Image 1 (spheres, helix red, strand yellow):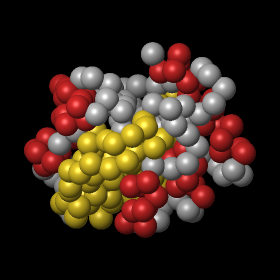
Image 2 (cartoon, rainbow, N blue to C red):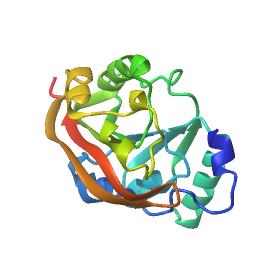
Image 3 (spheres, rainbow, N blue to C red):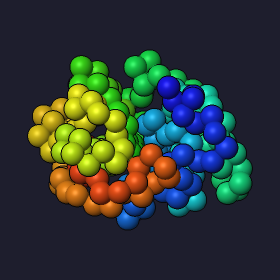
Length: 196
């Protein structure tokens, strides 16, 4: 599905960074950042321009080719890795920041992924996320139609119990990101850190 979606010439989610990430990138300690399900590269390129050492993982080769072009066009270096998140090794105490922007993950896999994520963060490392909530179904402005792929304050609190939340809110905002995220969106935004 993703290769097909990304196979058009234009950047289907745009080339500008996610607004929540752009506004809160400074909450991530300078250093190594991992971007999950990076797609066409907009968030990884933005972070690299802020001086982070960025690794971006995505399962779509087509998306990653566009991401490489975007990085080249912006004169930044990003390590792009073609991998399914189910197979990707986060390592231990490796990342100053991990970013997840509209990354649809089945609930059955999220718990396992978040354990790897918590382990992969360094002490004081930060996890930053924006995701659609189940309320998004009434808007139909992006995110598909599976509640199971969506998140909430409650699910994040439960599934990331090893992190300390500095910011965790559900809200509605205008999400204008290319042709697939356009209009009022029901989102959850989180910034959490690893204290131990």
